[in-house]
Image (cartoon, rainbow, N blue to C red; front, side, top):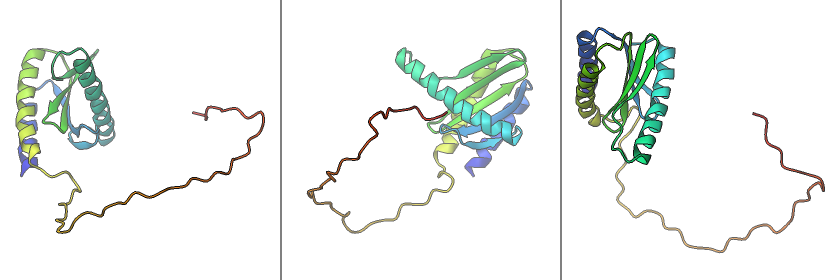
Length: 165
């Protein structure tokens, strides 16, 4: 199974890189796929990783500097790094120390490539195969639509107000 390949890759990365405190695999839509962090932290981190990926991709595109490779957030206790995994997923690593970040990037990018290949062949959770259709799709004929012409009476001093936040 593809999930076994991805799980094996993530476990191997954790064994090789003891500075990794946790991993989160999420979709680019921010939905959690798998993690070894506490559930609430993983769910929030998955959503934040997707936001980080979106911003990073937009910055790279605007600056015309190629494709997004990773997002790194340095903290006082380590760092959080997000890598794209194929076209639909993200790998986020939480590290306890920054150490040799170049070696971590090289190892994590290789895992992300292999995991991306495995995930590319899986069907999204809950997705069903599309039914085959043998007839033509319904056609729509243009018609004449009429809108109501009645005016709504407004208070003479009514002004637009911003809804409460």
